[in-house]
Amino acid sequence: MGKLYNRKYRLKVQTLPLVFVEINSLAGFRQLDFTFNVVRTLSQEPNTSEVNVFNLKPETRSELETMGKSTIELEAGYVSGSSIIFKGDIRDIENNKERVDWITTLSSGDGEKTIQEARVNKSFPAGTTVTTVLTEIAKTMADANGGKGAQIGNVVSIAPQGALLGSGTQFLNGCTVSGPSAKEFSRICKSAGLEWSIQNNVIQLLTVGAPVPVPAVVLSPRTGLVGAPRVSSDGVIYLRSLIIPGVEPGRLLSVVTSYMNAQAVAQRCSYSGDTAGNDWYIDIEAIAL
Image (tube, rainbow, N blue to C red; front, side, top):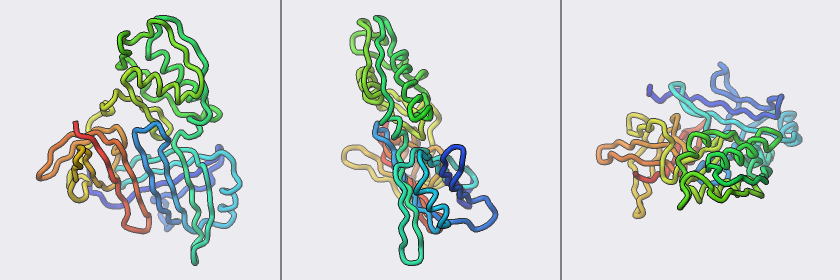
């Protein structure tokens, strides 16, 4: 990775087909500032973000308060490398004045409408595979929210790694799924030794405890690691990094310092930034392999 200077960011608030707010760092002139706090985990609960935008025009503030279904996308990093750290559904918009500043607060959930709205009701005959059942449930999740639900992601490629106790990869007596899709997806995953989450509106399926099958992100003082890693009594590694691409829940991290050389899977990533201040970090909780 190149040197970590010259921050890059892009905030996009959108109700298709209109873009209500777009703020980025490459426009060639001073734009509005904003702060953000994003929390992403491997839990089935929606990832969350809170973005505070300063001093939007009155007409824009009014539009944001009155528009219907809307999405938010936040990219952050450096000119040498950046990535989308949050993409989700806006659940609440508030405008408040503090001293001389108007602050517009956007609170959002990743895949929240998918989890709230998707339903499934289907029976499968004896011999149906775990992959088939999970894929069919995932399709109902993708169809939620007017067809803008969580994308199927890696379900088809990872589901074959799941194994049912005593019956391998097939339901010997068939299977029925009925009710909220997220609940049924969780039930089947648990029985097959799999876990799932929604990351940037895409379903991420993993075998329990395993990382995403892509190369590890190297975290060292040379690549963005800040301060010294801390290991708790229960084996959790706590790290702080500058906002660099690829650090997200489920990703394999290679932690390299003068006294630590460890492989760990990121479980929780909290991203915080201030386009006008010093804050530009990821606080990471990881489990060593």
